[in-house]
Length: 230
Image 1 (cartoon, rainbow, N blue to C red):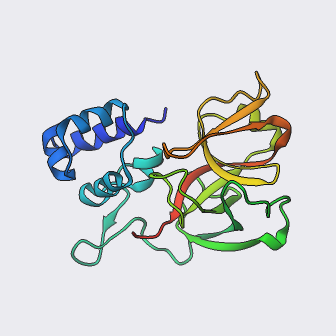
Image 2 (image 1 turned 90 degrees about the horizontal axis):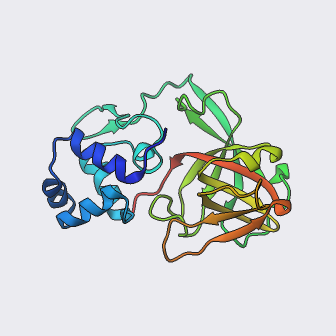
């Protein structure tokens, strides 16, 4: 069962042998903030998540999505340089890249036209995605911050349309009507109510209600492939 962000914050703090006060001092916040974050009463900011990834050396995919091991890194060549996966030039897969960014309001992706695709070569793909028909989607906009930032690329798996009504909670890329968006599904009401509510992680962004008949394609987002350093 996948843990919540707050649970993962507690796990990494305890794994590093830190008290809540020591964790707060490390991140430059107050101790009650750590208590609230671990309890799930507040979502951590992008800055806090990045600080944890960098200072406590944990996997970004694990911290944000609960995917893979907490520590993926292996010793690097010198100093603090570390590789998430040892590079094997013969171990790669070519994944489908959708060249239209995912952001609500885009009408360019009405059909899966091959002119909208190219390929991205991924070396040493994770076991969860290895051997599957994996797609790479560009994130555009701030509705999923702090987990997903504009300019990132995510790996996703296309769901058969008839299986969308069984989709569990998580992050999804959805084409509906003339829009293409990456949002979070909390409760899937397609079977019981005939619609789906797509939520933003950014508290300043809104949610979208989508009728079942308007859904054209849906991908389950599983990992971050690439992200710009800010």
